[in-house]
Image (cartoon, rainbow, N blue to C red; front, side, top):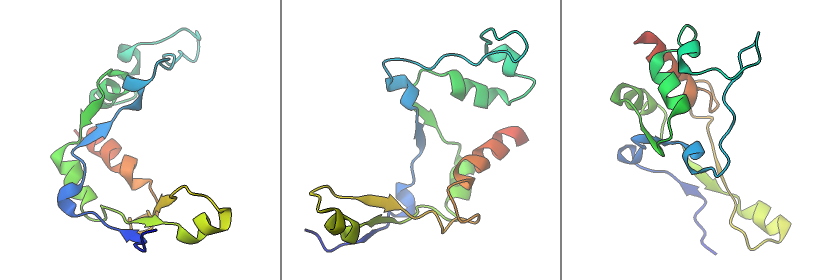
Length: 126
């Protein structure tokens, strides 16, 4: 068993693309429903509420979505966040599995929330 507990990537390893799990799902989620008619709605109905780029990301079938450079620059203020191996939990559970967790407390909000709030603010600003 490796004694290393903390793993920290370099800034140059911050991802340049988001992974879209829906592209790999065999059963895709149903489209959103109109609140009054309860009928499926398309991207055009969402346009008054959301920036078009966020709508495109919501409906894309692409596996990878480009992260804008401006967003990546903001991410560099606290990312990459450290990954820890939970050696004691593994031992307590008596499991051969390797258990890891991310510590998002280094972000300005002390949680994972800025990871999505920053791009949402960015696209709303555009």
